[in-house]
Length: 343
Image (cartoon, rainbow, N blue to C red):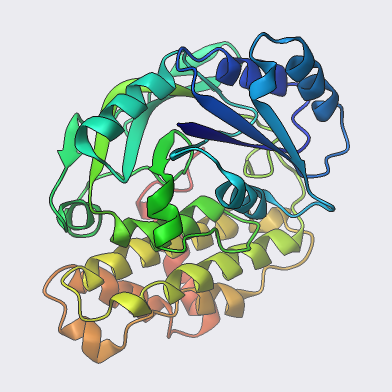
């Protein structure tokens, strides 16, 4: 019934706990697709040992890439090879509670949902906590357009930006030809902007089913690093172009203004992150590329006709047309005012 997608790349210190938590689920009808993305540590030796020694080890199926392809392509390998009626992605440094799949599956079947979201616990070392956005409301979206309106037209709501801890109906992904864009930076955000508008039935669960392990050595964590390759900035620029392209399909819909808002807000805070850490980059941050990342997917005349989010989109539009230095100064000023640059 359920395929667990389990991409693996250099997670030697975490993968035993992570895979064991998947194998120890009280839901038995599973397969675990381990995608070996050609890491250089001992992760796969640990996985092979568990597959051979754990009572449920036969559920593990390893698919090895011929070269390192990144997380997006690893997840696409899962989508293309899954035998389950549902797909559940987890990162191989995180872990799940024993009845995670049972809880998500019961809701998916009860409500015939395309997607079911669980709530999250953050973990760093021995410390655990729940952030403001980690605990979801107990809510079902069962009418066409209800989830989309919530995601794009309701102020101050939160839809998880990650794709782990979500049970996807496999037919929903296949019927809509959904695959992750082939990028190597915040792939989840790019995928969200493809699938969110297509969801017809969704469920939020307040039950915390997933431990998100925060690693200071992760590539996603700029905080602890003293040097960052400029290619990481280039990947952020690529992400912005990818998610802005996702808007064009939805012109003329009643949620187009909201979708533009969500997309541009993601671009704004990504660019803010680059600006915040620009002294750490191996080469000077290209200010023109930062400004170009803020070029709005809608025209000025379209934005002026928006019934919702008009002022916010006008601000984003402005940052995308100003001279690069002025654009970056404005973004930096707003980020500081919002407290975004605080540690």
